Length: 127
Image (cartoon, rainbow, N blue to C red; front, top):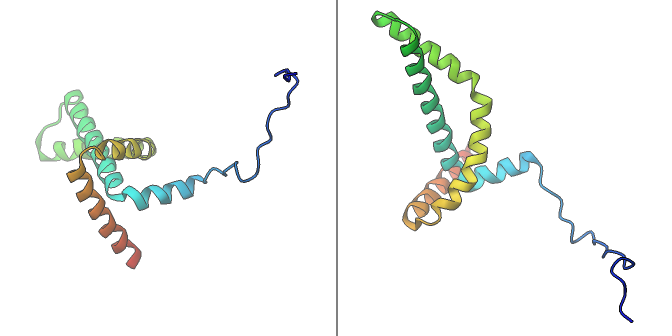
């Protein structure tokens, strides 16, 4: 007689089978150990893209004259970019692991980035 699937209890998960999900802090440390240099490159790429975008928008939206006017545009762009910092950090944390997986397909570039990351982590651990 075969058991009825509706009457069969589900298998019990053993404590060894259930792995605890690492905390956000532990995942961040793992990310930095594996691809810190790539994360820095991604962060600053987003930063400079935001800064340039805000500078262009401010320049197109306001009639600014002279060197002081240019400083005003750059200061405004910096302030607007600073406001977006939490979003840029989250975007960096979200984009870095998939980008690292894509870069694995380019062995030469991935190898150079891995070596640079090892040297960077070793330098930072000396401090």
